[in-house]
Amino acid sequence: MSEKCPSCGSCGMPMEKPEQFGANDTSNAYCVHCTNDKGELFDYDTILKGNIQFYMEDQGLDEAAAKEYSIKYLSTLPAWKNRT
Image (cartoon, rainbow, N blue to C red; front, side):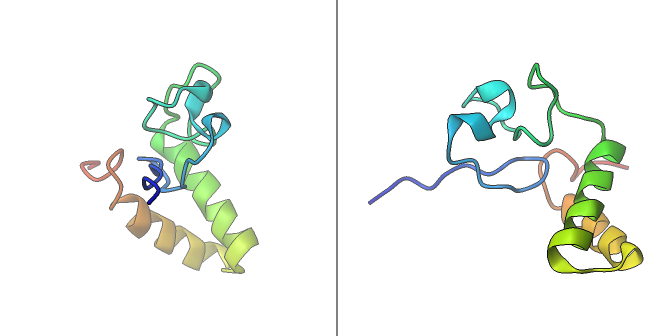
């Protein structure tokens, strides 16, 4: 039985390989898409913008729907759940 892979605490992406973790650090709670080269988490607005773009391109949502979904989804993740 394999161990469940961790997911990014900022966007929820599964992180299965070291190169998917911020700064290739498998102890980092955030993925390479949510961090800079040092493994530091980007600000909320940068993450939100990336998520909106992802849902528009990958899921075919229009911008308003992608934004609404992204805001709701991000609020469920550890990095953003206490954001006011």
